[in-house]
Image (cartoon, rainbow, N blue to C red; front, top):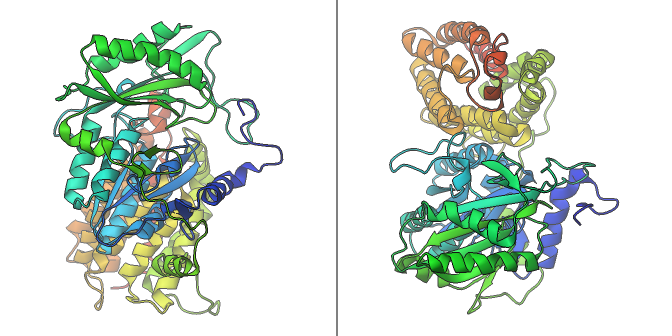
Length: 591
């Protein structure tokens, strides 16, 4: 498996679907697929009155994340493509499948795509009345400075979540399983994260499904200290290390900043990244154990094995969680998942197949994918659909140009992705505005369109555009029976701006779509005395000018930030597409 990560005849395009289905078949006694989604939910879930713990992330890290679903641990896991976040739609459907009515805790590693898509799904759930809390896992000491109390997490600058995920998930799952309320479960998960530190080392890169060469490489005979689970750069390279030297390299940075262990005990996880043999890890653990005891710490229920992998990467990571009595009791609690069991064993259902009643219940709980209803081609669009269709036409006409702009610093798929997302958004809005469900309003249509766009488009741009539409819809639902006023549109623009800034972590001037959205919402607010169409068009003109002016900015966010001054001279693709969208929407409004 180290040289051929995908078996003969396997199609990389279907990898996620195939392995999830195989997992559900193999562990039907513990988990089942979420209907219509790339996710699994425990057979114990949903449990009425119990907080649902929902985790997730990309494929390629098993047992994280689907292997940690079961009684006493996570209730459900949403799964993305290889090393990619699950989309907001997938997270939303997975959370709905697990929700027992007591609220949902979402906890996952601190990566920009996960933060955006889980955040968008949480907003949708909250808009529908579900109480949601989020706890980001930020245990990797190699990826940033120590967290400071009171500071908000910035996914592009602060610490990643790696194998310490397991400790946070275990504590949250145990707290929810014993019946704690949502605030308590979230508090304990955050406490576990604050008490956890991880440091890793890699000896060789990994090869993705269907790929002929490794995603990244490590020079033979060297060790990368602090490398991330997707090949993110570490702190430094060093020569080959003995087991004792490796143990020292792992333990030293953790002892330097591990919070005090009130009991003197530390939970210990020596995690294999995919290719390292268990026997080799035990040799390393022998020295880790000695180092910890020499430092006055008592390893408590240590675990050596694979918990958060990186396909066939060769390497290990060490996680420590400083324990107090509260955390110890939860860490001791039983659980039963495909990849991890704690005795005394949790409940294991005897049925290995989904029953007809479960199928019917699942189908009823999870809404079907939005598709446009059958209708004559010349049937008149209602407001939200008409606006989105106009936006689709404008962006599609400039798809190639947007791709060229994106290719300056990215992979050139912005135009393709946004067009694909807008097509899905049009279908979702049409289905909402003309379908049998209620409410059949523009606000409800845009809420549905936002998740549909994010799901179909994917990536950071999909999440940001999805948030923009969904937040606009959430505000417009405040006036379900009357015409939308300019003031209401201005409120919606403010909410959309806040959501996009919160999800993406960007600020005005960093060469993102915010540089077009900010002048749009400011101008719209200044023209609330005008009719909606006039005010919108004036604001859209301001956005268009601002988008063009981004050519003079130096990118400071995302992949483009690495280019420095080389990123100057081209308008930002996101700002440009937003200006096109806003201008087109204005043509559908009337005063």
